[in-house]
Length: 147
Image 1: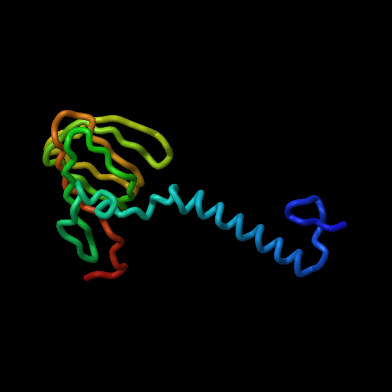
Image 2: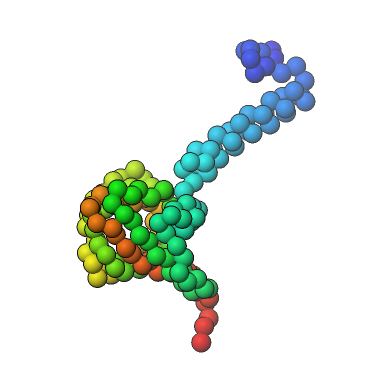
């Protein structure tokens, strides 16, 4: 009994069977890549690149990267990722956060507030009526031995 992709038959030769398996593996790999690495692969999205109109790099070295974010009312960021970071709120406001797991939360950032965050992938939206202005200090992995 032979099997062919468009019928219920088995392949007629071992070479055809190998080609069929390779095609199936390729299709499977592409499907997984699209599900994990396509639209869902937001973990590697640099906020300064995908949100270049609202976020700019102010300083970067081997220890930290400092970002300045300015979000006018109604602005919604594209999904991006941060390593562990500290935020200093220059001008606060109301926000809606869209987490990578699909959870949506709302809150208020108060002017002068300092916040620590673990690594995350998200998008934020300014749902208030004032411009939010933040300084984010992203922490980089430090070398094991430093004087």
